[in-house]
Figure 1 (cartoon, one colour):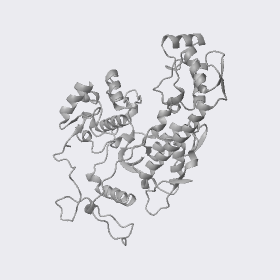
Figure 2 (cartoon, helix red, strand yellow):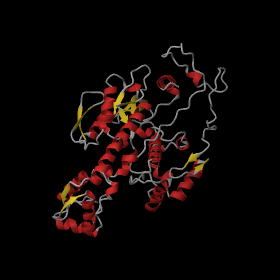
Figure 3 (cartoon, one colour):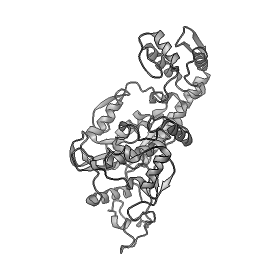
Figure 4 (cartoon, helix red, strand yellow):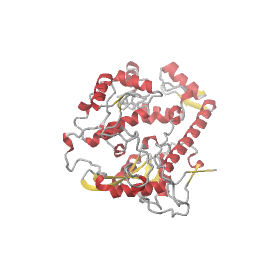
Length: 446
């Protein structure tokens, strides 16, 4: 059985994603993945970061939210086949920066963002996530009922046979090692093998410090209460069933112009009249566009707080709110950042809250109230580490009509120089905007 993912190219055959391609969640050992645009081959998972860096440095391609993509190898293999016959511009969002990938100044350099705002990419991500969830549930059911399991204890010479739940209970009852409840774990064999490997290296399971001998390690874990795994390590995410049920948020629905479409006899590739679709209300042409959401006087009607649902009409009032309620001095923490770095910070924080993750420690929560309580208690209402937010994908707004992005101040460090990343003005690239809108109207059939 095949499931179809809608193509964003008018007139092209619709590509397919076979459901059986990712039927089993593989440990992904030594999987060869070809670059999306050249003949270079990477071995996953070891070369995962090298592959993503290569795509950015050599081909100027950024994959948005790559950490949340289920079955990344299958995702890359799918797009590698697509890009054999199509250019990046046909699927990706295009962005112009005054910087080369290595940071050297260069005017009007083109970059590409592959993200789920493209319906085809959104459906692909959703399908891969569904396949991964199905496989994980099947494995989970097998592990709960399989009685052929047999393994020697990580700490003593006792061999536990029967259910994996019996082994986990033994670790907790006899050695006070808390791994997790059996009904919430999956791929238990691989998890236990990884814990055993770390213990053989004389490494603490929680803080991952190395010790000189096993008695010293055991005493450290006992005294420090480190007889558990570190929940902040993303390497353990695959072993907890709850992480497989994160829904893929649907991309924002684009507002469709109310202008009636031309007759069916019109050519499909006819040039789109940009002014006709986006004419001002006082223009002479007939236009029925809705500009009611436009905020006048150079400032949006409401500016939403970074950490809660509070909205203010004045930026100064909002900054005072964040200082009093969240103990964040926005001007102080962003004083050394230039305008474009502030944009990245805002978009990064917006995304973390949307995903119910703490921006400082990246801890995942099931409810926003729990996340808010954690950030308040730990004083984590900050902007996170620079390595987390200083990425090209955060140039793009994460929230529709984000008023905070419109009122950010230019800092003294925003003077033009070779080290500053600058986005090209819309006014100076009106023709590029027209061409981009024409492609969007054709590809998405607005």
